[in-house]
Image (cartoon, rainbow, N blue to C red):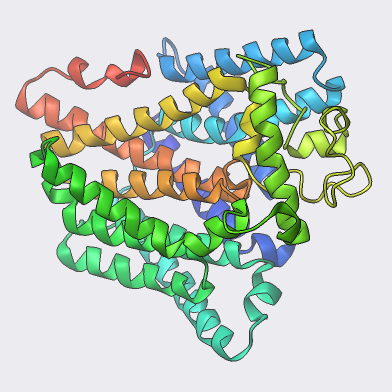
Length: 423
């Protein structure tokens, strides 16, 4: 089994996933595309492992699997829901991590020819998205009609822009094209995207100087200014989701469900300390399909979109779902993203290539801001973004190992990701 076989096979899989698992997901209306892609990726991974001898497994991947297996057993032990619900939610919650770690474990590397073709695909897709954005100015519902939801639209814009940057040489021209491509997402008129767009501009401008930054008053002040600017552009949605300027009764029907999910999750964190209410119990798709009795216990079963006959809003956000994992789960969730950022910072420390940190930071922020009012992290968009993140880390690892071999002849120092989250 050669690395070239892995590279070529994953490249084909990545392009197919981009087209059918993201760009055309809302158009073709097949909700199981991401599950199918996940199944194929697992089969491919198992095939590669079966053909390799003494292939070291990423220890962080094993730790993650161990954590989820613990929660699977814990959920069965406390009876958080029926067994089908627990197993179903286990698969859904594990899916994004599987996407990242399997790709990172396979460690594919695209050559220049493959990247050139991928850039063409991204530009062609972007032109269609741009045309759709222009038409949306004259016909309000055209994005919804073509792609099912506007959040799918700006996720596609974000993905093709990030892939273009990843496949580029990271020159000033490439960064300008990246921002230009990303600008099309403004047609979505979504406050969440405005925050992502602002962060992208800041990262492109300041990423080259990150390794020179020190933790002092100036850097703290700059960080606060960026944070305040992001909050300002997204304040309308933040206020709307959390009813900061009004009473609960004044919130729209769908937003009331979100508000109550957040409020109830706080009680669950307290009542089920420290490991949470278990898989399939609260704010997840499985807890709606196999209706969890926890909603009745907390008196929210009669709220529109949160009852057994209509559970359309139960999985409409992600953060309340973390109540299933408790305080320990929240800490692990945050630690995972810290791990990703720290790994990307190493590239800037040893080279001038900032695109890895830019892409990683934008994807993480995308998840963090989307999770306020969407279950993106466990959906098809989350699956593809985590696949892209795994690809970014794979190339990053190849670059670090090449640098270490050429400069010091020692690559072990750069493989600390195999040992722990604190790497």
